[in-house]
Length: 218
Image 1 (tube, rainbow, N blue to C red):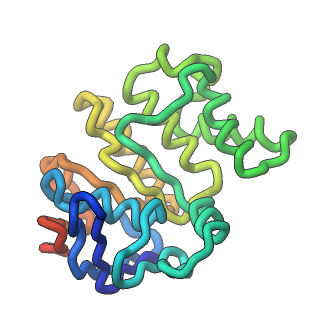
Image 2 (tube, rainbow, N blue to C red; image 1 turned 180 degrees about the vertical axis):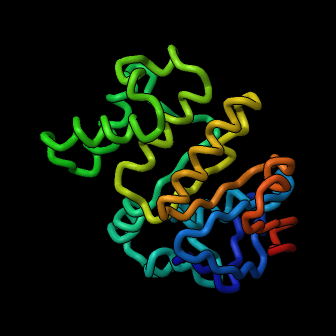
């Protein structure tokens, strides 16, 4: 489903971020991605959702190979992925339901199908009662749940979560992580970057650890 083969990533200003990284993630897996700041975690995630392309080596995502994809093909691959960030990235001037609906609108979902889809997604993440609230009226954990609902609009085969609990208190973090587990249990693969080693130790999911641009543990 996802495969890195001898991947190097070098940036013009900061130099080598990844060095000869190889791994595979199977359909339906839950994978923790850990390592210190600057280790290369974000580069790996960006290569998966093709915000960046490898300098050398090859990345396969859902049968598509980079480098070599056209820009239009990359956009098509991204529609099969769900991405959640630490800082939520919600639209402050739109309600919860409008934030999720917007994600459906930009991919061309028929207007008569958006309302029902939004309702189902908000029910799935436990926020049906908050549909008409604005992000500023929600807790951090609730905002992250909206972001997760938005990431699920296209029924992605993998959910990529970049420090999804990093800005949350312990209780909210537990709730968001349980939601990610539930999503994984339904068949969606989850790749979660995290600094929370206590969280990693408490769960027997696969662990990929990077340090100084190299995969040091799998």
